[in-house]
Length: 81
Image 1 (cartoon, rainbow, N blue to C red):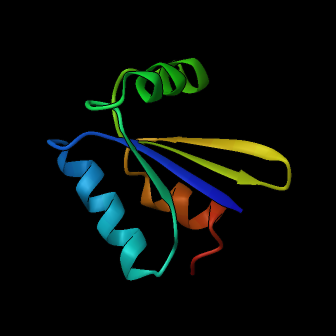
Image 2 (image 1 turned 120 degrees about the vertical axis):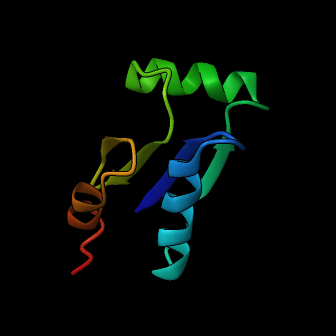
């Protein structure tokens, strides 16, 4: 499983999402779209969204896209009880 988060330095939900994943000891790649133009373009292409956070969970050969800090959906995809 591979997790990529698209976030910005000023987004409070991005910070909450990353803190939550850190508490659960879940590794992820963080792309700061306010500093990485290519990353921002990649995020929009994959998700159709301009807003952050966007989390992409690659699992079983499938990309699952979660918009915002949707704890319920993230828990389900990451098998967190």
